[in-house]
Image 1 (cartoon, rainbow, N blue to C red):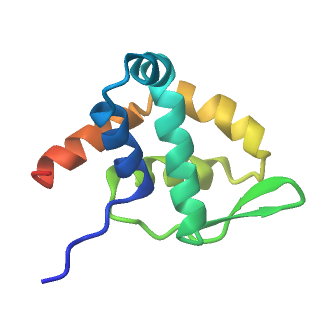
Image 2: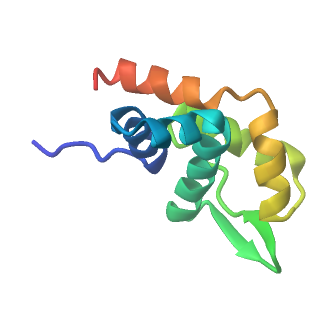
Length: 113
């Protein structure tokens, strides 16, 4: 039986909770929404759904991933229908009320991880 691979956002989320270092935890938790959102964007790059062209992010595949936290970000890219810079998305996505870290946590609980 093959184990399901964790996505980058899931791995990052778990790493943030597993680390024993208080310094690491404080620094991560101060900006957890930013880091989890950034890891979702990286996962979409990894899956070939986003590419970088002329210093802008371009959505090339809008098919659902089946992961709520990734699909919420895909929906925003699709609805915006504009290619904007990575900096634009990294500033704006975490402030959209996506609650990415909560969606990741809920997904891990549903997987009984």
